[in-house]
Image 1 (cartoon, rainbow, N blue to C red):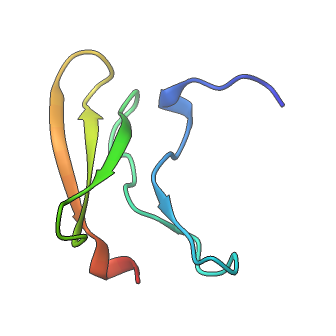
Image 2 (cartoon, rainbow, N blue to C red; image 1 turned 60 degrees about the horizontal axis):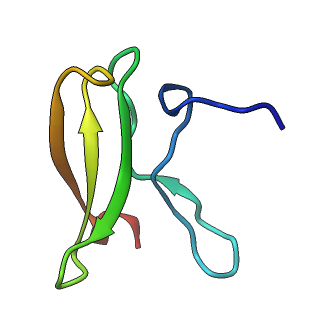
Length: 70
């Protein structure tokens, strides 16, 4: 498999333990946008991640409501 860079990958997904219902949690909106370093909130309701728009220029902490994916 060829090596890929962050800005070429869709990184944050949910998937059920049986392999079904794979869903992308964050869709890029611009070229060179990246996200990663995901973690759950203490209450399990939000998935937080590092978001850069574009890569290495503007840094954000972004979150997605996990209920939308389960």
